[in-house]
Image (cartoon, rainbow, N blue to C red):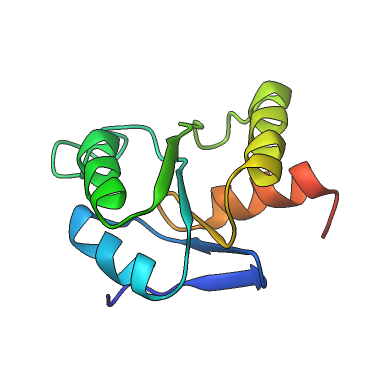
Length: 114
């Protein structure tokens, strides 16, 4: 996997856009869960869909949740849902969006960290 993973702590990391071809490497790196925060087609028709990535993630033994969050439009409900996922999904968790920034902001808002 050539996409950089940015660990925020031992149980959570963020990454830019991933594809189905990356999911085996994500599992091999030790991650147990994936959160997809990028809405489908945000980047156009060439962006891998959450459904395609989720199928590959499940095939690699990962739990996966699609929680689309609009860039620049994060809501309190988005933060609450993300906080719940952090509490309930097997760790370590890898979340991705376009660049990883949205996932980082969600994580910080959900955990109260800087």
